[in-house]
Amino acid sequence: MSPSLIVHGGAWDIPDEAVAACQAGCRRALQAGWEILSAGGHALDAIEAAVMVLEDDPVFDSGYGSHLNLDGHVECDAIIMDAATLRAGSVAGLQRIKNPIRAARTVLEKCPHMMLIAEGAERFAKEHGVPLCDPAALISPAEKEAWLQCRQDSHAAEHHRGHEQGTVGAVALDENGRLFAATSTGGTCCKLPGRVGDSPLIGCGCYADSETGGVSSTGYGEAIMKVVMAKTAADFLRPSSSTPMRAAQAAVQLLANRTKASGGLILLDKKGNPGFAFNTPRMAYGFVNPDASFITAV
Ligand code: ASP
Image 1 (cartoon, helix red, strand yellow):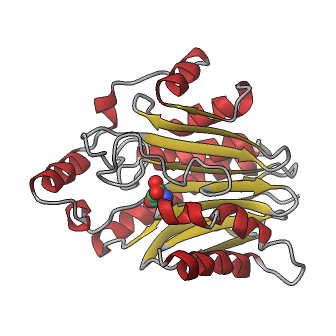
Image 2: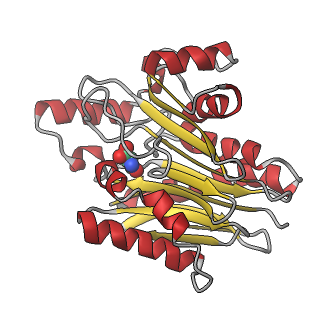
Image 3: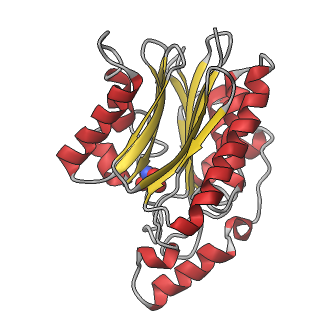
């Protein structure tokens, strides 16, 4: 089987000045994941490597540089799902983990449960070798500045360089047919402490099924949850007349029709063919062509 990889850095009103950084971030994520997949490595290692690159990049809303909640703290959510077993590892409300996707992987591989939150999730991750960090280490100067402006004024997208979202995600298929999907986010800016969006919820922010494909969603979480967008997109891959692009478009169309909200998603069908769609002004994404060249776009 040919390996395949697709990543995204969020669907939002990406301002012109952030386009190059978003595109470069997606390219670096593809490089990190593809180095593993092209050498015959495991899709789980590839997806973790790709998402970690995106989490470490402050242009995206995940890991370092996440939006701050109303109290001025970062609270991260992440999920990884295994298409073969339908098992997910999900974490929410993390304040002390630099790469939330590592915590999600730990839950996937080592936990009897599928989702852990807050201090319990951090403790579990630490017990399994994921180091804890100072919560302040996740706060970027740009997000601190935006939060201060939101407090002084009222919360506004302009304070965030014209954007409010920039969740990251990836879907990877390896040469042995192993398929995983992942999503990682800091959630929405100035969210209430304790708010959890779609991203770490199985079927909403992420889904993977070896009968259909793998999906990672982005956009307004409260709306994505209503239409269970990732699972819906995966189900749209079932009819033999469907294509990955049509399935992605149909799921985003459903989000628009039923909730009037905006968002986007990336997917790979079970054979590794990529699809993507968004109804926001822009989405940052990238995938690897069959000839191993990279496509990135914003
Ligand atoms: N879906 C994320 C959330 O609502 C935000 C995003 O995708 O940018 O937490």
